[in-house]
Image (cartoon, rainbow, N blue to C red):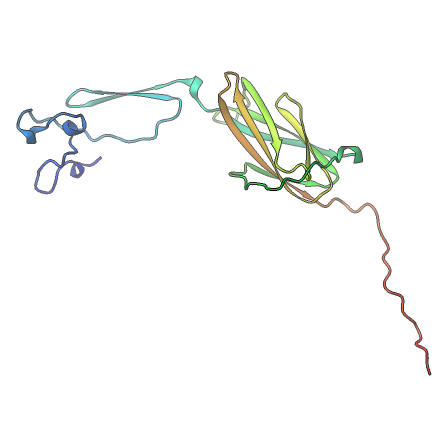
Length: 214
């Protein structure tokens, strides 16, 4: 906050001095002595920080208390291994009437139409080291006609391509043990055609090799 924000070019108070902002008359009102204005340094406070501001008259004392328990955990996807699926595992579900566009996608994965892949959402610290998450993680897919989902209930799961080509969104929802939300993760899985395994011979329309002559 600059000095110009408090005083006009004529040196008069604009009503934004420390006294006015604190609810008190300033020297312009003639009843209180001049109070020095203190430029306030603005910064974004983290969700786990609790801020306290104490007006000392000529200065402001700001105390930020960081509470580790309030910090938002970090999560990262673990994808794999990829393996071939059996025909019995390719169970397509109903196609949704409407699929909302996903927000931020954390990871994109290509999966062949005859494959399946395991996954998990791993909690990490600020520098990426794996840590234990005290809560649960659940999963959902937005198009069961493309991906068949198995949620193991332990923070891991598996999706199997049903054979239909297209893209489905896998969403992970993390919840703390006290029931408060901890975060979400979004993976976009595109099902592509598999490797060539069979061949089909196609014949054209038969026609005469030597046309009849009159």
